Image (cartoon, rainbow, N blue to C red; front, side, top):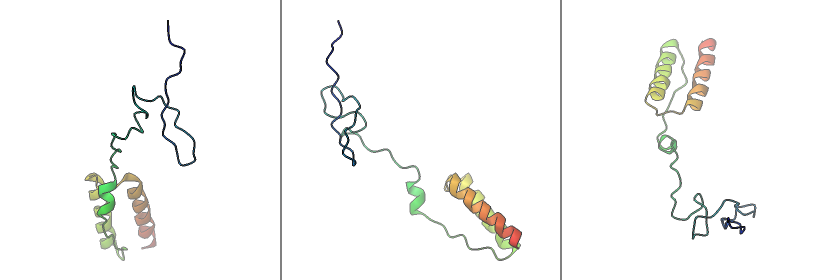
Length: 99
């Protein structure tokens, strides 16, 4: 016959003062996500944020091609996130129209 007592819930308190409703790990006070022994997930973009790169404003078609090549190379090497690359490529497209 199944037990009718509810499973213990996680004791983690969020910033807005409500409590986590996930079931706690067996014999523990916290759920898997909030357990103190769990290391936070690594940010995949953290190493990219430390190493910025300088992309000068293109003044002629040659500099525009160099900037375009730099963005493409960094995207291909996974050193630039796709969202930022899209914004840069759009900016280069506008610069190309202005030239």
